[in-house]
Image 1 (cartoon, one colour):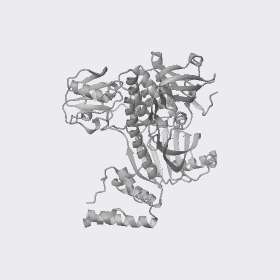
Image 2 (cartoon, chains in turn brown, red):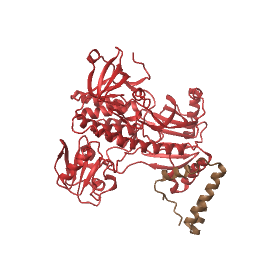
Image 3 (cartoon, helix red, strand yellow):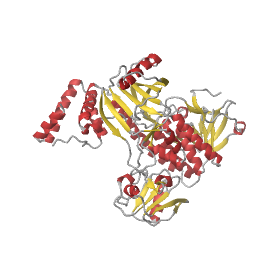
Image 4 (cartoon, one colour):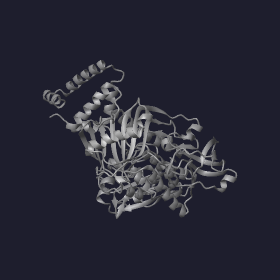
Length: 59
Length: 539
């Protein structure tokens, strides 16, 4: 089951780090960064059915 | 001459000439510059402990206009310790529910209602002039009982000369200038601190490129008493975000985020403001209700702090030392905690019961608190005002997901509301040999809980306390300071949950500002004496 409940400790710190990682990037570079990030995270999840549920949740 | 910089809402301390103006400079142990919430709270706290405090203010009462409006539970607990809390809660608007909207739909709502069994609510809304009035009322009452506090209105400090162990102040009055000397000078003179400027000290930080329009509106409306916050509001001309919040006296605070490049004069035109307010109110009730504009202003803000809050015998507290954006109500609330932290330390030092170096811990602890407040309010501001395309994309993604999925809600940030600062692992704190709840570990503030007909916080603070739960205990004295015992043979259920957890008994040492110094599973007078020494910097 895809976990859609809060699961990240220090949510504000996570969000700040996420936004900061885009600092100085052009829109194109940011898009590419996001794409890489999604692939890295998807690999970490690893479970195909969870990834499918995540793709659905993001729609 | 003393210039009038603003109108006052209440005249609280009219100018009266004192003999000191015609005499040679008299020495005072503590001179507090600024009669705002922080200066008044500090003066009352010192006075009640028996240490004389002189407050100088360049006006004669509480300034009119938009200032602090949200007071947090911790502030109310501190005010209550000094006898000024109940009138604030009686007058204030208690609120617990906040709703967050994005465009025309609700993203989610939250309830700040704390667990049961606390004297004070999570928050009240109360205009700052009332806060000042209630503190001055409490000071007048204390003065009548002989407490050594003096407030001199229309006394404007125009020069400071710092010597090794004292400061000489030149004070202007309607009858001309005079001089006084202070062993300790406490600058509670606000974000534009003249004392800071006179000493040539910097105040660096981050400027946020945004303008917020405040409209305090008087109307009879039956909106619920809730905090309503909109990201990208649907009503015309409201800017990137908007806020609606109730204050006492049928006043509603409305905030519009206007952006950076604006024409201030034009935006402050009452017709233009009314058009914005009309659009907002009509979107909520279907028509424009009758209302009057009570107060309007445009503000920008910065997040910054002084590098050091202590400079010799001059100490900065409140906005003079640190400034944050208003989201989170961390300005006045953190300043009152500054006063709470400083008063007992100054008192012990002036009574010769602690070394002057104890005051360094005020700076260390409150600089840490300021960093925490700046971090939280900067993050809220960055969420509300995304600085780049991609951060706006993420922000709006969070808002869209939060509508459907609980996981995204903790990421929505319209202000993280002020909570008490904890000093876990700081120098003045000691043993944690009780396997007790996290909420009462050394460094935290004491949580409230029912006790008898009242509450436990009514019995703690002012001086050091030994709180003994289901344990034998006695007063403990070290270095001339006595921690008075407060024994509870059978603590209430809530009190047990908060202070005992799985333990059957416990002994706590508690500071005068209700921060927990150390805790043990049983009464050990030598351990308590050692912790007491540590707590006053005598380790």
